[in-house]
Length: 328
Image 1 (cartoon, rainbow, N blue to C red):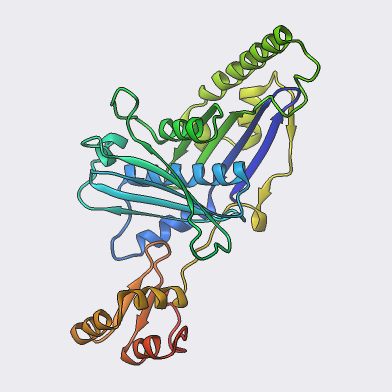
Image 2 (image 1 turned 60 degrees about the horizontal axis):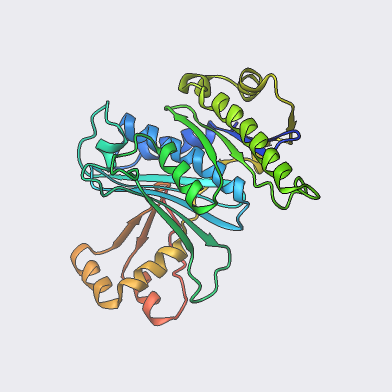
């Protein structure tokens, strides 16, 4: 069962999380394998799994009431990868691939061939009002010197540093059975009462001491190997890495409260999309094909609109045809 564990380092402004996606991740892969496009190439699968783990960690980290959408897009054979995580930790993921992806392809070869790759994090609030825009932060898949980053974790650590001004370590890994991640983050000292009543020199010394503690913990976290993250249970990982640290553990999120696959597609949403195309274009599609077929890229559901269904979309505002539901 997929699970998320949160913990604090007692007496230190440092927090951590570990996520292991098992059934949620294999469900995503199964649906993709059953689709017309077939299974992902191993490097694409690994990247999307890392994104799924990172998306759950980031959503849980900021406790955002709405959808966190993590996207990586670029100029290689992998055009777009998307992970969407809701505030209840339900998630879905997909990738658009145009071209062959070698089994040994890394992030630069997949998405940043000419340096145009980008990583975007979008926060779309629940019940967004008309005219209200989601927040979006974008970072390049290249460092300040123009060199391509080699991993998703590097890009996301840059995003966290720029958007939240918080030092963060991310260790991510995925295969065809597990997508997992470890997040360690340094919390701001101000506002926590740690510096109250201290002289400037004492505050500076305290800040340096806390930074030293964080650097030690970050180094331990960075030593976690891919194979360990994929094969070891959470208890073993935390014991091996932080056996000398005092951890305050919280109740794990699993089952109905934990990470799980769920798709937000619906016949109503597809109907609105067809309305957005316009009646003329919808009629042209019907004249050519006899039916409008829309497949959900996330879950594989198929939505079918015939001429009567489409006519209702444009004659009764907001109405949805009562015919077939999604075909899984």
